[in-house]
Amino acid sequence: MAQVAAQKPVFAPWDDPKQAPLIQFKNVTKRFGDFVAIDDMTIDIYEREFFALLGPSGCGKTTMMRMLAGFERPTEGQILLGGQDIDAIPPNKRSVNMMFQSYALFPHLSVWENIAFGLKRQKLPKEQIDERVNEMLRLTRLSKFAKRKPHQISGGQRQRVALARSLARAPKLLLLDEPLGALDKKLRQETQFELMDIQEKTGTTFVIVTHDQEEAMTVASRVAVMDEGVMVQVDTPAKIYEAPNSVYVADFIGDVNIIEGRAKQISDQVNIAWAEGQPSIFKGPFWISHILATYRPTMSGCHQVKPSRRRPLIRGVYRAEISLGKTKCGCHSRQPLASA
Amino acid sequence: MRRFILISVPYAWLLALFLVPFAIVIKISLSDTVIAIPPYAPTLDLAGGWAGIVEFFQGVDFETFEFLTSDDLYWKAYLSSLKIAVIATAITLAVGYPIAYGMTRVAPEWRPTLLMLVILPFWTSFLIRVYAWMGILGQDGLINQALLWLGVIDQPLTILNTPTAVYIGIVYTYLPFMILPIYSALEKLDDSLLEAAEDLGCSRFTAFWLVTWPLSRNGIIAGSFLVFIPTLGEFVIPSLLGGSKTLMIGKVLWEEFFSNRDWPVASAVAVILLLILIIPIILFQRNEQKQREAEG
Image (cartoon, rainbow over all chains, first blue to last red; front, side, top):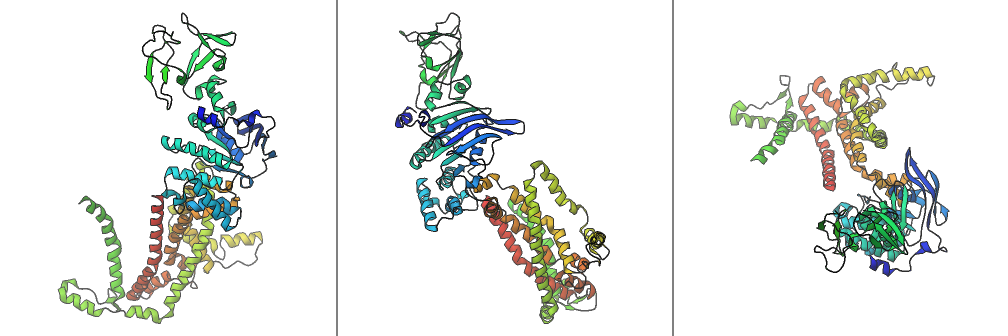
C-alpha cells in the first residue's frame, strides 16, 4: 500500500480548493418509506478519482450508487455531475455507466455484441463501433473470446466483459457495484490491480461499492466508510488505516486491537493508563481517539520469549500467529491478562 | 440392466399408447369400407397363421389416400385448419404476452394468486366451458343483451356460428398454454439486465425490444406450439361455435367416422394430419432442447 501511495504522491484534488469536483452530493437524503437509506449526505468526488464506498450491507452504499446511475432519485437534496443537477436526467441520457454486481451481461448476445450494445445506441458509424469494441477487447484481453456467449466463458472473463461494456461509451463516471464479489480470492487480487491499471489508462473517474475493506484499501484513492446512511469517515486509505476517527472505522478497517484506558496528553505524546499495575503506553497522537487506543497487528512485534532488553509494551496471551499477506509479523493478542 | 429398466418404462408407454394405436389407424386407413362390423375389410386374422397375414397384405391398398386427393374438400379443410390455427395462435400470443408480462411486473406475493387464476378454468370441464360460450355469444346471449341494453347496437350481432366465435373459443381455451411458458421465461429474467440496457442508452421501449423480447423468445415459441398443435386438429370448438360454415379438418374427421361410418377415409385423414403435425412437433422439441443446452 505504501508503494501505491508513493506512485501518485501529487494526486490529492480534495486538498486543492481550486479543483472543481465532478460529483457533488448536497444534503442528499433518500428514504424508502420509513427507512432512511441515505441521511443528509454531502460529499465531493473529483475527476480521475478512484473513490471507494465501503460499509456493511444495508449501509446505503448501493443506494448512493443507484442514485448516481439514475435508478433512484433523492428524496431531498441535489446531486450535481460536472456542476449540473442530474435529477431530471434519465439513466439512458447520463454520461455515467455502471458495472453491475451480477454483471448483467445479455445472455443472448455474444461478448462482442455485449460490448457494442451501448455504442450502437449512440448510432455511431459501423467502423467506429468496430474500432472501439476491438480497443475494449484488447484493453480487457478478451479478443479471443469475442464470438463467445457469456455462458461459454469463465467468471473472471465475464467480469472483464462487464467492465469493457461499461467502459465502451467512455463515460465521465464509471460505477462499479461489488465488481469483484463473485471472483475467488486470487483472481480478485489480480483483478484489483487490473482495475487500477485500466482506471489510470482511461482516466475515468471510478466509484466502487464494496464491503471488502482490503479491496477498498488497495484500489481506492479515497475511501468513504459508511454506516446506516451516514459517511463516518472519508479519507485516503493510509489515513483511514492509521488514524481512524472512530471505533467503528477502526474496527471495520482491517484487524485491530482495541485497548480501553485513560488518556493523558504529555507534550505531543499521549499517555494511556489502561490497566491497574501495568505500565502506561506512550504513543504519538495520531492513532489515539479519546480514551480508545487502537493498534494494528502489523505494527506490533510479537515475541514468544520475553526479549531481554526492551520492556514489553503490552503483555498478552499468545493465541495464534496469523499471516497478513506481505507483513508476516501479525499477531492477535487479546485483552491482556494481568497474570500472564 | 437398471438403466435398461429405467428407459424401458417411457418406451413401453410410447409403444402401448402411441405406436400401437397409430399402427392400427394406419392399417385401417389402408383397408376398404364395407358394411359390416367392423366397417372395413380386410381384417388381420392372426389365427390364420402365415396364410392369413399374406391374405391381409394382398387386400390392403392406398385407395383411400388417392380418394383424399380426388375430393377438394379435404385439402381445403387442411388449409382452412392451418389458417385458423396460425391466426388463432397469433391472437393468443397477442393476448397472452401482455398478461404474462403483467404477471411478472406485480409484487412477488401476488404472483401465485395470478398463476392460480390462469389455471383455474381447467378445474371445469372444457366441454362445459365451450357450451357456456354458446350462451355468451348467441343471438340473445350475454354480449348481445349487454350491447343492446347499452344502446350500442339495435340489432343483435351474429357472432355464434361464425369464424369469429371459433377464434374467441380457441383463444379462450388455449390462453393458459400460451401464458404459462411465457411467464416462466419472463420470470427468470434478471431485472438488472433491463437496468443495464437503460444504463447503456436504451429507452424503456428499446430495452424491452432488445432484451425482454429476445429473452422470452423460447417461451413464445413453446407457447405458440402448445397452442398451434392442438388447434390444428381441434374438433369441439369449431363444431359447437363455428356452425356449418367453419371448415376444419377435425370436424371432417369426426363426420367421416361417425356420420359416414367410413373408417378407412377417416383414418387416412388422421394419418395425414399427424404427418402435418410432426413438423411443428419436431421444431418444438428442437427449441426445447436448444433451451436446455443454453441453460446447461
